[in-house]
Length: 416
Image (cartoon, rainbow, N blue to C red):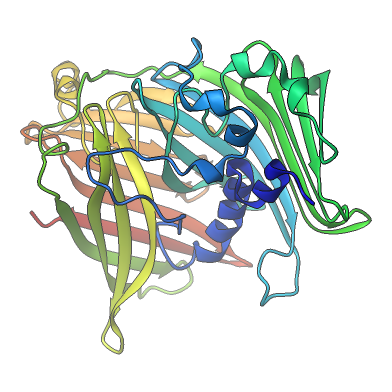
């Protein structure tokens, strides 16, 4: 009989994250957003499904443990990932890929840690493309990439026939960490999962999984900590906008077009595009919302493309639904319609720009590596001053389809 930790492994967060990456590949040609697990619908509360993380079974004290002292808002943790195997039961051809996960801690309360998880996928030509920015609402003492180090002091006590616990060094890149290693193996050896947490901090340093026969596995995946740094936030808010945390539920709608251009064809293809947002959870310094995308054709009408759950907090650099009031004071120092470079990520090479625009609003832009015909991707987001709302989003991606280049642009405007 499998141990409790083995029983829940298929739902544990790092494994779910790697599966999300494969889903991003499948859905990239369909939607700007990516599918995600179902979120909780209780407005005003922040429940956590305790079955999704087996370490709560091993260490129940993590339910009430405080956040580690190194866990600070405005910081980013980058993990390299790679995976291979058969992920779609209807497709027998294996697939593989690699890229980076980035966790930005955008809010931290006594009850929850809130991160925006952004996935960058290597497109096969060493260009990194962001595929999604999804919500990660966890406990202060147990998140997607850490656990309170106090739980590791006597970690060997939870070892059992299906779970080994050892202390050992782990080298990731050029750095060596002293880790507590958990390895869980199914009774028939058809699955194996490994976690390695830094002994003194509780940070997840390495995670891997194998599903299937060890000599010919169906799926393999691993992630490793690559870098952590403090983001150069041009502002740091104190609380969300009043409309974000209003008692009455709210929703927003963005409508525009999706344009597809083939470089060898002068006639672009236009389709109507729509994104509906509905708030799901919130606290004073952050809000979570569900975003659902639709495409419209004369033959089908509006067809749903996919949904994700995203989050906006007061200590966030990009991918925001709203900006705190503090964001607009520094913008006064920016020249009108003159982009100011805010940051270049040393791993993904994504470059951020900020700009004051003529209606007293702010525009933020993220762009990827330059190619011969422009950035491999570029996303511009526009915000108005009075309520901080995102009013417009424009994203352009250059996609290499064998020998033909395609440029896809999604241009959406707020309808209220």
